[in-house]
Length: 383
Length: 130
View 1: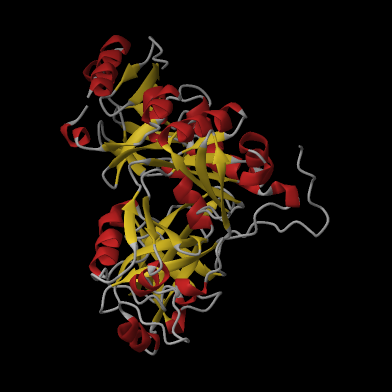
View 2: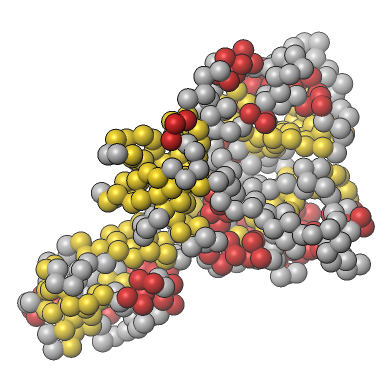
């Protein structure tokens, strides 16, 4: 094992991954699976059937107490006080100057209990920001459960029926036939422990994110795989999220990003006087939108990658922040910031790919939107 | 991992099959496995003169792009157009339908600088151990 890998943190599912002959790679300080059978096969399984990701490297903070709602709302840009128990929402963790420290999901698990799920690479930032806002009189506790739990993402059009079959209808709330509504969450029992299930994901597909203690988490992984769910790695996670045009922290957004330019205004609550870290700067940034995060599709052969220069009329007009191959569209796709004057759909640009200029076009965001089943066409869930 | 005994190999994981003064090249089974799903091949035009161990083209998987190097010197007489349309052929059959470039060999003695199948297997074993 190379020296650099010795200090990597291991997922609680490390043994399971090695048994499935996953190719492991270092990612944000963790050793995680890049792929199992192959990125394309895994990507297609999620689009057409169902796939399972180990996302135990993600940050998981539980904030509890009568001041939990106020604390979580101070730390992030979305006013979590608006959430009903059982609801979740996307939010940003910003600096006072408005720079994005992390993007995360906040769930109101119960009236006085929140779960904050952020990027593994920013787990320390999330914890420090929330801790830093704790005052002696604050009635709230912050518990880091990154080490003591497993987090899985079960994604794909067959996620609901699969979770109902393996973990019981309560986890999927499948007795309602349609499962848990989008972005809602619930807690149920699995092998004698609490299982958190939310109807969320990072693939553009229907599905769940699941959190439970280590041992039941391993059992859940194994039972889902035994039920025929395809294990998937970080490679497919990236191609899926790119097709769905979901921002990746460190690529598409960072401390220098104006969130309004990234199209993340929906994560920011400005209209009810909520006070949060970075509010004043973000209000000012809203009036300073000069560029937009756009979707680009290559019109010729070649693959746009992160860092490639975007040109128009021979002049540099931007850079690719995320790029790659779209298995669904069988073409190269990318995201990058372009000046507002060039951000309209249909605008033609060139992208410099290893010394060659590849023609590309601004296309609607996202690249892929999952087909919505017509009402009444939902298959009954097997009991 | 397949390493056909009748081929010669480069340290950069290309193979070459020599038949008279015709050389057919591609990437090895180990290389395709390491690269993962291939999605794009950029190969030289017919008539291009290439030199041993110099860049022959580019090959891209979902995750990354890699250069491919010519195991021998010569002039390009053909590229595998079927594989350019369907790069997964290189994953499925790297020594057969997934060949990449055909050349007329300009210096047959260069083949002696390449690894035998046995030597190549040792190289892969070393890389895997690292």
